[in-house]
Image 1: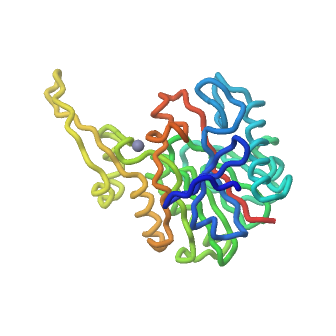
Image 2: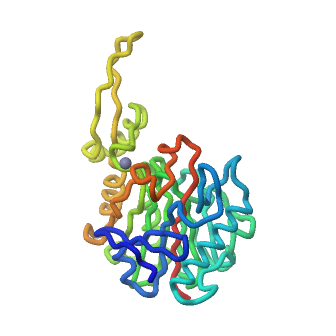
Image 3: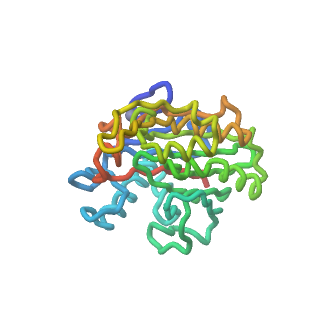
Length: 296
Ligand SMILES: [Zn+2]
């Protein structure tokens, strides 16, 4: 049995050594495959032990490709079908903290995995093609999962603070509406493991970008005085923004129903037993991936 632990907001799955988490609300749709990976079950070593999908000077592309193969095999194993998920059908973002979304079709098969990409600066993916496997990567940045059960369409977004500020969630919804006739009120949206409010500490400059873009977001932050600058006499503050609430506000303003937004309630930095964290590992982290596919 693949599900080893069922928490209120997420399920922990395991096949062999590979572990991943899912949303119970999305698991309820048998036509859908989705996953957010953990550190466990791959071949990477050192700080990136072991199911790493992120490049770095201490990582080889061979290791990453092998980790994709291992992940695909584990997801196939759970589905009881060899080759059900495979690298040939994966399509990966080219993440540069934009709000750009690509509509994925068969012409993109395996781009960013076994083939060179023919696109750049893409942080979101949508499709209604069955069997195409969307992939985004994460290490503290929000992973957003979109499912339209009516039109049978899916979307994934890498929504770090910059993507959240640019409201990539809203862009995914606009593009799904245009391409697939998605009605926002039909959408089920999942918010995956990412920094909690306390772990997203930023300086005045970043905080002001959020407060100026949408004053409502200021109510989703708290501030802490850290002292007076001994040179200028200026008061210094740190800000803590609840990015998951900011994402939720964007989604609701775009027409998603509150009860259809599901947050796993997992912090990538506070759970080093499960996840890599850019902030927690001071940049020497590995990366997790989000996976989403409509069953062929
Ligand atoms: Zn945290």
